[in-house]
Length: 153
Image (cartoon, rainbow, N blue to C red; front, side, top):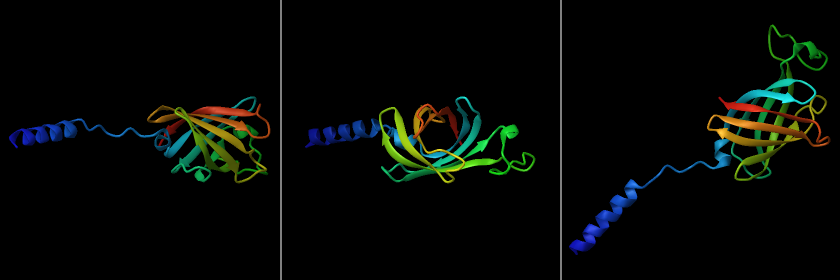
């Protein structure tokens, strides 16, 4: 009886001391508010703000906006370009979660205004707890790409 009690106390101590904080999954690490600068090849740069929610396959997972950072090319017929008052919003978007691997998350981007933006595929990779890399590829023209780094807000 005494040996059983000692063994039981030993096991309880062993398991209570060896508990480690559970590691977040890749999907859990990308959830949150992110902001950064995106460079579209042969074009321009954009600021991006996005809120990523829980990632569930084929469900809306995020929404956000791209903002033009070059007022010289801003078109007042499409965007609000008064740099003294606000950043011009080039494009609102929604992201649908498609898949993940051990190193990346893939989402499908649908612009809220198809006249201003093109639909694309987004690939996110964790750099560290506060940074992710962002890569966008146009669905209709895979040579039209953009990339950048987003910081957690």
